Each structure stands twice: as C-alpha cells, then as structure tokens.
Length: 141
Image (cartoon, rainbow, N blue to C red; front, side):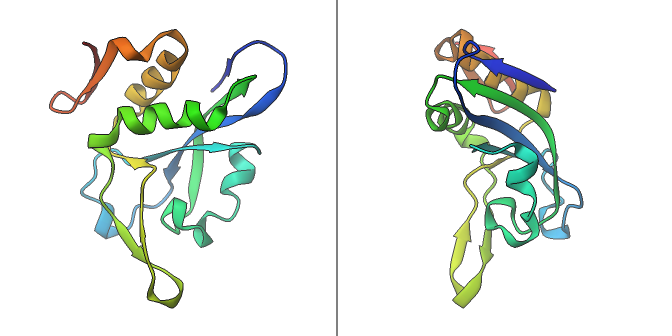
C-alpha cells in the first residue's frame, strides 16, 4: 500500500509501518504491535538489518504500509502520529550493548486500520480527531 503526501515535487522521505514477523513471548500480550517510522530510504531498506536495530526491538519485521512524503518535513509528519498515539505507545525496554537500556518510542499497540486512518488524516486535518484509547479507534473530537 503506497500513498503520496504533497505533490510530485521533491521526495523528502517515507513514513512506514513495520510489523514484527515473529513476536517474542514477552511482547505477545500486545494485540497490535506496529512501528511507525520515517526514513529517507525506502521502508524495506530501513528495515534490512532490523534484528540488529533497537528501533525494531532487534526483531525481524516486514513493511506493511508506506507513504511517500513530498516537499514536507517528513520527520514532523512522522511526529504527528507518534504524538497522536502517545497513550498507546508500547512500554518496552531492551538491554543493549554495554548493558545500556533502550526504551522503545515508535512502537504502538494500535489496530493497523487506525494507524492508516491517522496517517491519512495528517494531510486532511488530524487536529480535529483524537485517539479513543478505550474503544481503540480514531474519532472526531
């Protein structure tokens, strides 16, 4: 699934949704576990070494959606769904090199359809919507 933000001017990056291909037992209690990210590469290129990348919880992933962003600050575009889904952020930490602790900030326990809806709303005015954590979906304010 690929969508474009902006017109056909200069590609500034992509927003992607990645899903773990094999969920470890310590994360199995999350019904929906997707990472929303930004890359100046393609989503596939960004996730190529996911098993060594803490941003992907050092797990194999697959790209399940990607949107091209044109003439926009794609990092700001990525930040909108991160803020929007803040209360649904997965609370998980990993011990990494030198026993440092990494806290995941881009993985969310949100139904995929709601992530798609929110990212599409970035263009049309997400400020008029909110995430209903109890119902698990995007609703008008």
